[in-house]
Amino acid sequence: MKPPSRLVVASVAGLLVAASLLVTNLFTSPLPFLPCLPVVTAPSGAGYEPSGLAALADAAVYYATTPNVPQQTRDEISLSLAVLRRRAPMRLLVFGLGYDSPLWHALNPGGVTVFLEEDPEWYRVVRTESPFLRAHLVQYRTQLDHADILLQSYKRFPSCVPGAGAEGAEPPVFVRGNDACPLALHNLPPEVYENEWDMLMVDAPKGYFPSAPGRMAAIWTAAAMARSRRGEGNTDVFLHDVDRRVENMYAEEFLCDRFRVGGTGRLWHFSIPPVSRRGNTTAAAGGGERPFC
Image 1 (spheres, rainbow, N blue to C red):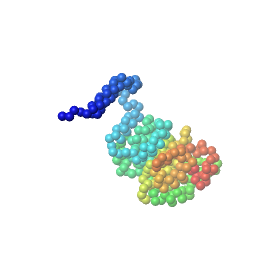
Image 2 (image 1 turned 120 degrees about the vertical axis):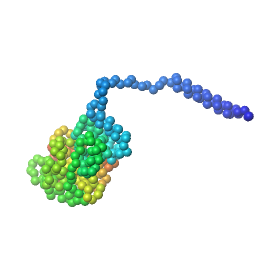
Image 3 (image 1 turned 180 degrees about the horizontal axis):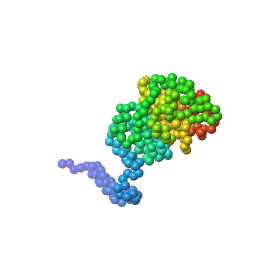
Image 4 (image 1 turned 30 degrees about the vertical axis):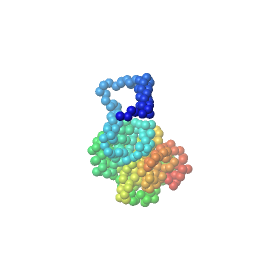
């Protein structure tokens, strides 16, 4: 057997020296500093109190154990989350039920989150999977293929237009019982009208085939509610699927470009002040052509 060459011997010796230095360094170098364990102040058995923590835990388990994912992207969710972090607990009204409903419920700890859904079958599916959600089954009078006609003709209905026929101070448009306006969601559950909503998320109803309800009435209603606000602050309105023509043109007409404060992907964010705090800026901003703006 041939003895190993000098090169091989030298290589092995070098590896042994390097390994020796590495081991020495591991034992002599200081370990990264670890902070002290936090003090546990809650009594044993307190669990996930307050209830908001339990909702967050339930949502984490739900999304970790199901292939279902929210309809919105991470960037889109983050845009709404920024407002929730700043304003929660709040009153949040969401048009539509979906795989993201447990998320919106959990992200408003201590607040009130209400969902409105128009599809009876889908309503039963989501409510069966998430019975803790506060959700209502509602009806729409609109149809997507009537969107252009509704937009062109709504000013002919005085109850659809802010201040129509009024003198002096502009009265707010009303939603509850306003069946004369074809865009008003006039027959929603009473609790929807009896509360002021700090944030509205319009991600329903369906708007991707001609006979679908479309989001025309949801957008008009959100705008009317925001205008009529009496509490402090503005109303944050989020509209999804703005890449679609109807959502885009109804947003411009009723939610108004000048109130749009952000957006990402297919989501737009509007911060709408009540008409009582707009002064005399409506007419100057083109309120004649677009009375909601």
